[in-house]
Amino acid sequence: MGRIPIREILDGSLEGRRVEVRGWVYRLRRLGGKVFVVVRDGSGSIIQCVLDKVTAEKFADEVDRLGIEASVVVEGVVRSDPRAPGGYEVSVSRLEVVGESHNFPIKGGEGIDYLLDNRHLWIRSRRLTNVFRVKDTVLRALREFYRKDGWWEVTPPILTMSAVEGGATLFPVDFFGKKAYLSQSAQFYLEVMIFSLEKVWAITTSFRAERSRTRRHLYEYTHFEAEAAWYDMYDMMRVVEDSVKYIVGKVLEERSGELEFLGRNIRPLEIAADEKYPVITYEEAIEILQRKGMNVKWGDDLGADEERVLTSEFETPFFVVKFPKELKAFYMKEDPDDPRVVLGFDLLAPEGYGEVVGGSEREDDEEKLVSRIRAEGFDLGDYEWYLDLRRYGSVPHSGFGLGVERLVMWIAGLDHIRDATPFPRFRDRLYP
RNA sequence: GCCGGGGUAGCUCAGCUGGUAGAGCGUCGGGCUGUUAACCCGAUGGUCGGGGGUUCGAGUCCCCUCCCCGGCGCCA
Image (tube, rainbow, N blue to C red; front, side):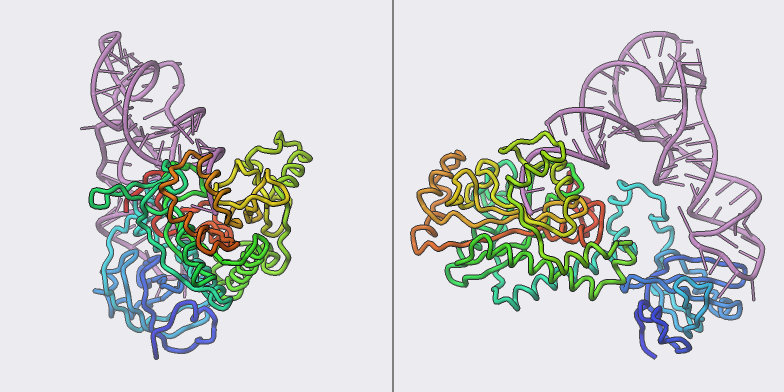
């Protein structure tokens, strides 16, 4: 007899066998003589453990010490019973309370603010447990895909010197008397590394000091970024599409139980894992929106309302490419066929989720880059090392950034990004 | 930063046109041998976010301030 994850007991193959379950008390119901202890464990599932009158009396001291979220070791025989949640229960022969728990602060029905104050305890919920199991698979699949595809993992810095994309959205840090900032993107450092490793990627934490008040923004998030020499925008988009398909496929394959628990409709994911992702230009997006009766014209940014309308047009994730230069960052390469636009792309998830990936071919021409930096009003001196990349063996290259929590949010069908990360930093929330 | 909503019991909330506060849940005690957020009986519960003002009297009206939620902008 060994220790068994609860999820395996619910498979049914262990019926009649003696098992040991270790976990935490999820529900506790005493009825005179009998005691029902519902236990949860890291498998994200629960099992009902039943003590009959004789056993309950034998372990009376232990029963007295039980409470919601107490950690327990339970030994007993697995039995099929239609009255048990999940169809199986454990008929208990031994009960041990490892760590007591009295008056657990979360009892059900609490509001979001209270729950966030108790995130360190709320995190034990079955819902969050299942979400983080999905997130693990997403991260693992990302790493697998890029390793198999010949990319190198690198480790860019988090502490950076200057305001690369404009200072307002950066968190300042005191670096021994010098002003430093927490990185909001590893892109420039990845651009450096393609000159040796050619195809590189990194998973880092990125920080944005924008006081965003939406369900899609975190101040601190997990950023997957990739950069490759010799890749044009379309090469990069193919990689993005293939890797997203790979991830969705892996989650469908390995985390179907979790998705089911989360109430996720699998169908859009199955489509996203199989079908080609459409590509539309910014100009076509504007036309679609105008046809839908929206008041937008060429040159307007695609806001949340516009994104929502667009995502309802497609069943799969889809690309929007070639945005007006003014709407996008200075480092994006100008389209040789149309200098009004840049070779940038966004990947929008369907079902109203919106932007998950943003990428572009990078401007590799020093003169053009310098004039774009000047036009933004940035200090050229801050960009010397970045400009050096265009002076010594400049090469066409492209890259992108993917918001891991946004991807998880879409795949898991969450209605708020805060549940895609254990300790969400947003709305000035720092505790716990 | 902007627009909207809200801070009343441990939690979720009610409290009309001003007259010093209620419910459900929880907690505690008791009962119950199949409960599923168990149920039944009893008990416990508050400087009404903070400060100032009007008034005989403020949870309620006015001003200031702090915090939180939903949305926008920004983005991943």
